[in-house]
Amino acid sequence: QTRRVQVEVVMESQDPECKVFADWVLTQVVGAPGIMDIIHLSMTPFGFGKASNGDGTSPDVELGPDKKGEMHYNVTFKGGKPPEFICEHGPSECEGNVLLACTQDLYPASAQWFRVNMCIQSRTCADGEAPTADAFAHTGSHLREACRGTPSEVAPRCIAEVGMGMNGTLIGECVGGPMGTDLLIKHILRRETMQPPVRYVPWILVDGRVLNYPNRTNEYLLGRAICEVYRAKVAKFYAENKTQIPMPLGCFFFPQEAPIVRLDKSYETAIVWLWAIGGVSFFMGVSILVLWKLKSSQYQGIVGDD
Image (tube, rainbow, N blue to C red):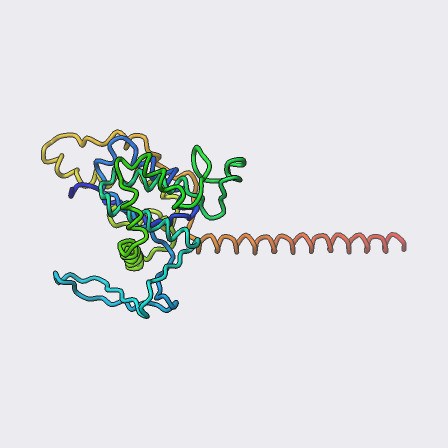
């Protein structure tokens, strides 16, 4: 277990970027031969939403020891009403987030919850997608099929098809009950206390180090990063035994370079401004040149008349 590479992904259930990453990268990497045997995978399914008291005010959050003396955050909701969760892409995203959280918590074996969660993620219509339009124009991000609906609409079939014995009723009780609420609070606190702070989703950590910041396209190099960290972790053990490191077969097929360079939003904004300034400067230069040519023509006409 100590030699396993810790992989943590912060995601939102209906975020288009997360859906692309889940289908085009995460599913392919984790499913590659031998990779599941060298990683410990966890998902934090809550991005830029928030929790509030039933009246819209913020709950009290305090850092303190638990019964074992370990420090952790305590959240106290006030007003006697159930907590309210507000998600970036609407209420159905909150429901999707708690679905992903419940399957992971109730069935902690990665080989089981991962298949279901990726099925839910890829079949869900992300923000801006619709089943009918996607079926005709293929506007969605899935590799092979159109999106099918909201997380709660696609989850039952995913659980039945790839859940390997998961109890859909038990998951439903978690989603609609206090357990689901507690899990969302747990994931919100995890996301809020990450260092460095989460700047966008998906936010990917490989053995505690952020993979895709500031260059977001490094997310496509997840497989390479896992294999490099694993090799470094086991190198000493195999060196002592004078044997070659048996790398998983999947490690020999992952891309070694990102397909495109995609920077953090702050860098993108700076580049847009540079393009805008360059465009304005070019327009002004052309305008000055046209005016100069026009004045020159007029001057030559006057001289010719004389």
